[in-house]
Amino acid sequence: MPECFRSVLERLDQENELLHIRKPVDVRYMSPLIVQADKPVWFHDPISFDIPVVSGLYWKRDRLARSLNWPESELGVRFPRGIQKMMDPVTVEDAPCQEVVKLGDEVDLTELPLPFLGERDGGVFISAGVLLARDDEGVVNAGVYRLMYRSRNVTSVDLVTNSDLRKCYEAAFKRQEPLPIAVCIGVHPFEMLCAAFKAPPGVSEMKIAGGLHGEPVRMVSAKTNDVPVLADCEIVLEGQIEPVGWTVDEGPFGDFAGMYTEVRWNPTFTIKAMTHRSNPLFQVIQMPWENAWLGAVAMEAQVLEVLAAAGVSTVAVRVTEGSACRWSVIASIRKRAGGGKNALLAILSLPDTKHAVVVDEDVDIFDHEQVEWAKTFRVQADQDVMIISGAQGKHIDPSLRAWELPRGQLPTTSKMGIDATTPEGIPADHYEIITHPFRDEVKLESFL
Amino acid sequence: MSFYAILRALKDVDYRVILQAWGILREKDLLARDQEGRYLPR
Image (cartoon, rainbow over all chains, first blue to last red; front, side):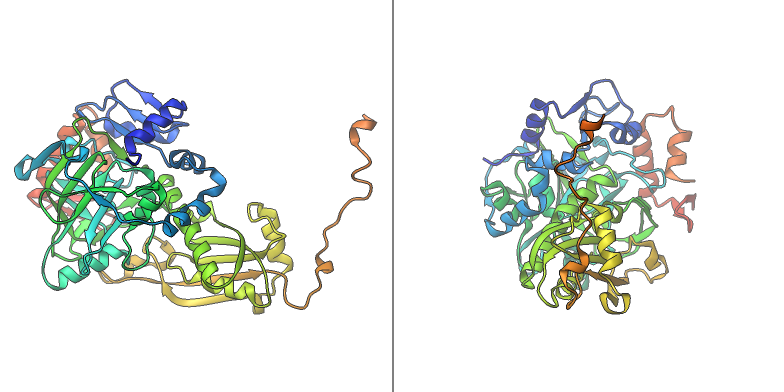
């Protein structure tokens, strides 16, 4: 049986990588405690709630790696192996996530210790929900979407960005039908990682999660619709996104870019059933870094994938922290003539990438000085800087002025690529770095 | 008023009670939003 959220916590606990707070805590004060902690936090006693809270698993790159049980240096490399080895989930009859079932009027979201995550947030949000829905071909799509609490059995759901879920919803909305969905909270990090990844069309992200687990993900039929849910998760919310369009106020929200998105207009999610383990845990993804780092792995894996498809021999890739692990990419390549430009075109074709820098294999992309050196001395702006206007953008980028767009409209952005590889025709010895004479023979210690 | 301002003003009120009351206000559509996202009574 694959590992689950709970078994990951047990492993982290054994490694002394979990901070237990057993004192009663007012839920409105959890967010500042999570960001101050140097480990993921388990709040055992949220005041007035029976369900403990766990947060901070993905707050830093090393914590993410620990949760995944991967070496930190292999995050972008291991993820594609899940794609190569993906396997269909299996359906089980009995599932821990359905040990307790509440239907209809029994549903009460205020049983969940919903946190307040950012000062300007428009309310409290469910931030760690993996949302599952079927597309028109019946393929189960998974993604992580914020849900703003509105009432006992209603949240808004953010469908402003151009996402697979938005496509599913648009199809249902066109037919004036609700879209059945299920939201799984407290899932294994592999499943969360895959939900943060944009799988190729027709591929369910949970197949990739199975590839990462090395065995199929266990699913179980939902109680009230035909969307399968993750059998081993902690809590499930089943229901439908209503065919009301982008009409209901949602947000603001301090999002993964580290800034607030403005009030948006979105549809609502009506919860018809809440199921959970007999002693569930409520996971909170604390903004911005937990969401940002989850996205980093998928981004790096996608960059590796498109570079391979473009025939580029890649040494290393990384997303930059300053770009919230998403908008800017640096890649080092073993270049052939024209390879720098081809690499840029490949990287910039990804929907989220706004800026890209490509360097030769002699540059360490984790060393800012070396990257800056390559940009300074291997770039002529009129030949090596690529600008692409009118490409796909994300509302969260303030420079796009998305608040000026009509409701429901998608923004575009300008992308930039910098080819900082050695220009063709310049001999390598022009870039020979100073080495100091007798360095190996003369040691300072001898003269002290 | 922002949600944060509400939580600060009601520091002595049980957080779950606030969520429940908030749910009723939203269910009855008693709140409007201004351009800054602050809540206003309708």
